[in-house]
Amino acid sequence: DEIICETGTFPITLSSVSGAVSVFWNSMGDGSFDNSAAVNPVYTPGPLDIAAGRVDLKLTASANPACSDASDITELIIRKQAIVNAGDDDTVCQNNMIQLKSASADFYSVINWAHNGLGTITGASTLTPEYTPEPNESGILTFTLTATAFGPCVTVSDQRTLTVNEKAVAIAGSVATICETGTHQLTDAAVSGNTGVLWSTGGDGSFDNSAT
Image 1 (cartoon, rainbow, N blue to C red):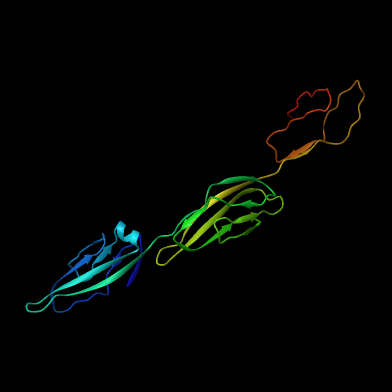
Image 2 (image 1 turned 30 degrees about the vertical axis):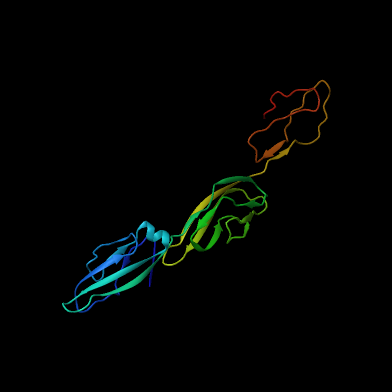
């Protein structure tokens, strides 16, 4: 018996005949030979062959006069090519544990996740691993899911990105004292990880610009 991947063809190299005037190959499936009258043709499996995962190929040798024809059957095993999808890109806030969801894979022997982040990943051999980032880690991380195929099919990979946004920090500044006739310039406030700012008051005063 021989084994190929569904994406390949099968060169029949080990067949042999003797005492024959002609030969003919016949498939018990829906594939085709490049030359069914050759001793060593190439067989291309059809969709039904691939779906079944196997097909029998029959070689018939037409005998000389007064002799009987001879035939033999070989089984061809057809393995599925591994497929993998790492899932959708996602965005999270830093310092949160992240579970990678929506990944899928099929026709594989093992799977494994790799990443370029600073944190650690648990469940790297599953479709739903968890990533724990380093404290204050942020940026765009790439996660690669690799599926090892059953031979002779090939290993395949797919990637997804995870954008880890810096958490917002707001420091309003130090306590200040002013005279009732004056105003107060807020000079030591600070923000980070923000997309905008907005000041509000617990009293009834006003800001000249509450968005700076």
